[in-house]
Length: 155
Image (cartoon, rainbow, N blue to C red; front, top):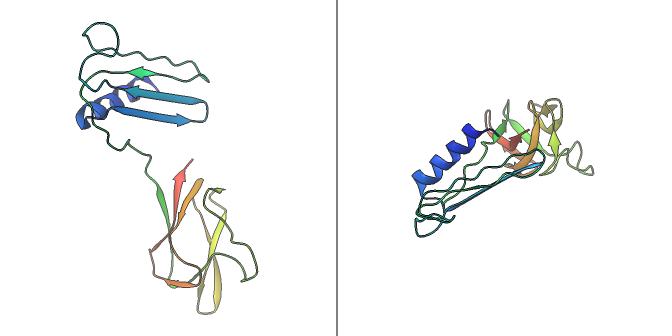
């Protein structure tokens, strides 16, 4: 994360009156905090902004101003959609374990489910690299063309 990204987060915090923001990725951590009374959190009345980034150590930023808690911006998730009409199956057979579970990392070639169409079992691949965050369809239920099956956080 570079200084431009940090400034963009600070601008979003000001615009949306966010009092605290924290982001943690592998070996990087950033925390932004604003005082509730609008004054500076550091000594004096000027706005304070302290940014430190030394990989793999955490980065910290502090900003003063008014406060209200809102949701932090998130990385948009991708949807794995059904390429056909058919019946959705999470596993190759009723006795088998599901192809994937929530929290599993997948790549473009990972089979995530089967869709049965006209007695033919079609393996559906993730087609993207990331982590499965949600299963959107129940096992053995019908699906439509383009219907979201899974949510995936890109890696």
